[in-house]
Image (cartoon, rainbow over all chains, first blue to last red; front, side, top):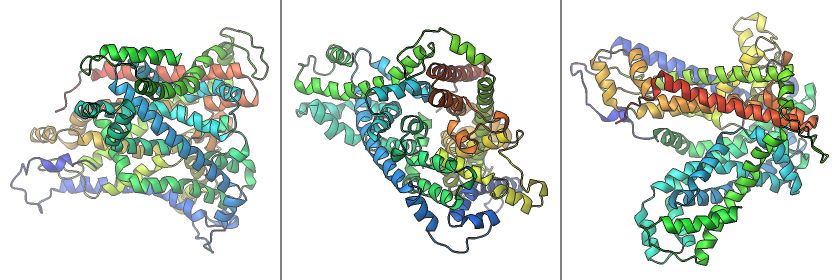
Length: 298
Length: 333
């Protein structure tokens, strides 16, 4: 994360205190803090580890005891969730939809943010605030009319329809967070590019966009998580089972058979859904937390 | 509509920008640039976001059933019907409870954890963070990245009366009465249990946010307070909280918007609305009205009520922050 403010200033105030001389009060506070934080971490980890563990169990093992380890460690649940429960198909659909929507929204969003941030024209503030409003209004309000907009253009229950909706609803966030970044880019470089004869298109793609890479990366990660986790839009707009995305497939799987759900498979399906975001989180952990940090210092 | 906006946009851009080369010809490069860069995203946004929102207001004043073209203007009848609809009012009340409890508890908890991480260390010398605390941060943040539906399903299993981990642990600790306690099936516990799940998912994110905000406070403030003899609690209350006010306000609004929705969690934990509709939320009623019963006018009215609730919530948060002295912004740095 960012530099540790606390470590930088003032060597010491109370010179008489040698490091071994930690006051008892401090040790108590530190211990209590560690205990509380460790307890919370345990509270976070326990359900996740338990889910992982249960995904290897058979249904009868799950019914027997929540603690027992699976007798036989194998991937049967994963295989049957992937094939028999169509999780594989949902996974593929999700990859297609999220992949396309993410690419498109990053391109369109960065272009739009760039124009709004670096060109002043009549109505630019208005467009900016319209985007901001799009960020605050609940999607639920738009869901019924949106259903008919997609129906009228023949994209209801199709993957392209879902992609285009994802793009439209991820756009305000993307624009909103890239805007200050493009605004802060130095004028000189843009002017130098103009002097060198670059047109508007080349100026953006060859000069300005490469400079915005760090911001693009953080927004892309947040968009990935948001789109991968999206639930409402597909539930309302994508009701054909063949086109289900993972989140939808999970909910359907959990509800479909009432009390006869094969819990081992359900846990396996949950793990399959969580693993991609876990991978993204593991790789980009620093960047993710770093961009939360930046957001707050603005 | 967009095209004319773009066209006027280009001319305006030329007129208003004297500091760059005074007059620009409308070359193909420039026109195509504005059409694609502004026109395309804006068109998408207008058609798929703005237009549906605008339509929702109109639909909410009709008796439209969706699949027939006839639609009568009924004024505010749908809203009146919602006021008389006990189940919808229950859902609205549940959302209000969520909006009151979820942000408050999440923020207090994440602020407490963030304070422990940042100033849990030595009280002598410069304020020091707790040692080895990045582990806690990494772990607590993780639920934020998990799909909400997966969180809901995991916890639905955790709460399972006979096979869930929670009752397993509780009986293991000797609380026999929890042997098959239905956390999500009892009217007294269904809502608190569901609220806990939402909080579980968000504390880590706001903890990281608060850690960042607290680290942004100059260390001198803490040193000065300590020299003046302030204890840890006093410092947290008089230095930290006033200086992270803006962050708290932002967090409050985001969490409130989330709590006024809460659909995914409730749909995963108790798809039917819970015992006695104890965990039913407005979105569940809305989807039911629209896509099961075909009452599109009524469903749109519910959507409008949700939007009004959201805006009202944001306004209240701003107002409270103002009234309690948030406008005297302490200058940082």
